[in-house]
Length: 83
Image (cartoon, rainbow, N blue to C red):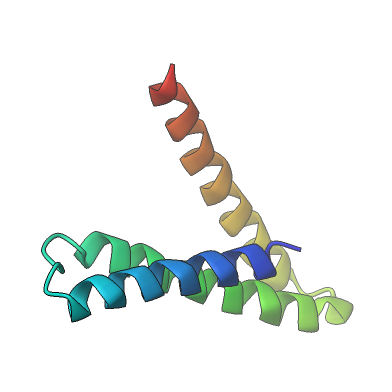
């Protein structure tokens, strides 16, 4: 379920960073590029977990739990600073 939003977010961020780089405005875009690539890697990992979910392997379960925990931590941090 989260594969599509991660893939879309990663592709969109990467397109924005590449567009900025094409116009000479790539200063400080390294972090955005890292987040975009990380989002694409997470989408790939989630896609593979979905494909191999029928095997019910512990590796798949651990991968999904770690990705979800990172998602919760990043969301919690963002909400705390918004207040």
